[in-house]
Length: 370
Ligand code: ZN
Image 1 (cartoon, protein in one colour):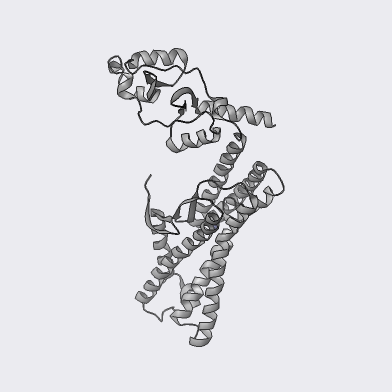
Image 2 (tube, rainbow, N blue to C red):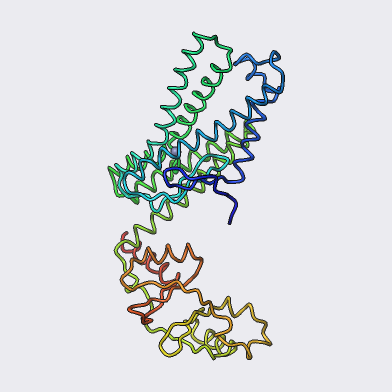
């Protein structure tokens, strides 16, 4: 899905903008600029004194400023992460904030603590320095000067960003801090589960708060936190369960392969009898591709006895080595949206590992763990 576009690169990290972020810039600009929000005028002395156009210019400037502040917050996280050797793939700015995509969050509570704190700390420092400048400017030029207003707003924007992100709602920063703290006292899986539970509790609270105040922004954040907490909990549990298990241990090694000349009708009968949903296509000992039930279904019934495996097979192959971790197989399947991976050892097909094999392994291992 290409719903975000790259706007630049900082510290070697691609900064991407999601289309929803453009939407929030307009909303923020409108709420600052709209005359129906008198608090802005009252607080900063614009009110009815300044012409509307001046207020709009300020509003759009503030909205863009907010966007830069969110970006700086994410860069704060990324800076510490990179210094600790964690690779950051990109930073995407959504309407609810920024998300830094990293390879894998390190399972080290001290490192996670430092990384989680870095964002709010960045916001906090920018906030305090801005407020300090605003106070100085106020005493020198007066409280209603554009310069003072600018730094006053910038300061509060960042302090709110800091406080909001420190709410202990996993997977928000505060929630990550909480998980790291739990993880220093109990096993990582249990710590994640506890932090996710608290995250979901906060999400439900935010949902009702958003509902009663008709704050749609709050509703979206509640939704994001709830889904995020559950998803990360699931992913962490699976990774921990599969730890130390190799592909070799869970793959099926007696692989039936098929010839590229085999017709789809024959393959269908084979699938029906053997209850398999995919076969590697091999010719002269070389793996050419893979045919799955989905490839079969794309061809109409009456054409299946003249269409051959070689015509429909997927040629783009994702393969894995038998000594690779099972969790890597899981990650590969998720990223490439395939259900099975041929297992190759020194150029030879030695087995096949499917999503079902992984699910079975997870079930058996968690059963053993209990
Ligand atoms: Zn953050």
